[in-house]
Amino acid sequence: MPSRRDVLDLAVRAAALPGGAEFFSAWLRAAAVDQDDHQHAPPEPPLLRNYQPKFFSPADFAALQALTEILIPTDDTPGAREAHCAHYIDYLLHAADDVAPDMQKQWRDAMAALQQAGFHTLDANGRAALVEEISKPERDRSATHPAFAAYRLIKQQNTFAFYTSRAGMIDALDYKGNSYNTTFPACDHPQHHVI
Image 1 (cartoon, helix red, strand yellow):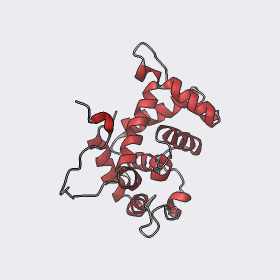
Image 2: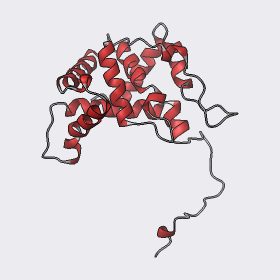
Image 3: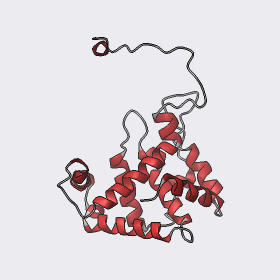
Image 4: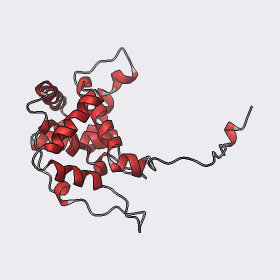
């Protein structure tokens, strides 16, 4: 699996591609909460709304998008959909043409394993059940699944994409940047006050 350093290197290369600065600018603004109305995100940037996959086939991209949204669903905070994790992964792999053909092969194999497992043709409930089945080796060391390596790869890169995005870092984690606390309030959970 690619390391964080490999992915960051690809991000720098992707930013240097024609259209790279425009893609990352739109991606970084996606799901940003409007400062005047803290409950609604601004409209999705057109570049992301009308995004055409650069690396994946349309069917594989749709499957990747569905899987990323199962792994990090939208609840009271943004999820993989708002963070456009599938878009980020696709764009980075597009940049990997000359520098990381092994990574591209790994992703093509992963999507083929998902397709062979039937993920591409299932409805939302079927996909969620299949992800539960595929991920079982994570919880039970004696279990196996032919698409488990694909699941781990997608989970790793989805997590990186989400927590690198504005939606993950700022909107979900409420990251404030380089700031410090002037006080450290005590825990207010009663169960933590028992000695």
